[in-house]
Length: 365
Image (cartoon, rainbow, N blue to C red):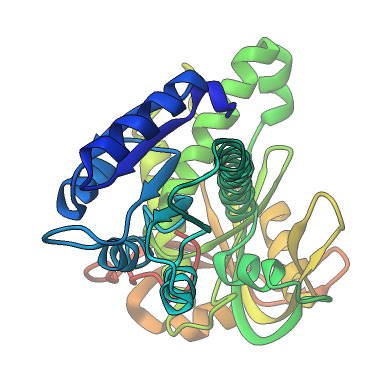
């Protein structure tokens, strides 16, 4: 803001003083408005956009002290520069005005050269303050944008810990449920489709997964090519995480059965296992929240050893779910990198579907 663009409000009950001061400021290239008492001045300040207030002290109805007190209590006006121009020369009055918020105090009759210097200084202060506010406003917007982006890639509780500058985020969970899903026949699909169509199909499939993950209060971990990984029971522990994961898997199969995507019937292999994991944030620029441990390996192997359109679960998952679901047994077989373990295909619900569990408090929205 330059002095030529400055807008000044003069508040003085003496008409001659108002006119003299207004004429002087007009000659300096300032835009000038006037008021004869405090209440009118406050109304004008609220409705207008002023850069400087020149204020008399002794006025009818509302004096200058009360105007200063109001400005100090109003967040939108407290930073407005105020120069008191008064015939009151007592030191107590000057001190009181400065304490209440005045930037300067000039005695009548004032020196025009000194007045101009004080006005220029206050307008420059206002310009710098406005620039600072714009800078901080932009900084806050950038911070909000950064936080929003961070929440898109990290669970909310983890993002908050990272934003609080917590270093080395790593947690151990005694039991969570992990699901891997992979699109069957994806290599052939990639050979038949254009790159644009292929990415569109992946986006639609994974958007379906994202919606069901959100609905069941689960935590998407990552996508790897045409594979999708999701966990239940972290970063905020929750009960019945295995049931929530199985319901999500069933919903995926049900949706894909009745919903060709990109003109193609899509079938996925799903593997689910429950057990302990280590979870943490890795990276310094491109952050990633990931899981490690035997539970993750087993869930991945269950998916890769499964069949298209089937939900392959471990014996421990079946034990947790009990007779609420139906299964098809499989012979004991060796899972690569794991060894022999009892597995089965979960084929459906035996009774009414389990309720959708509300998202645990503090998980990502």
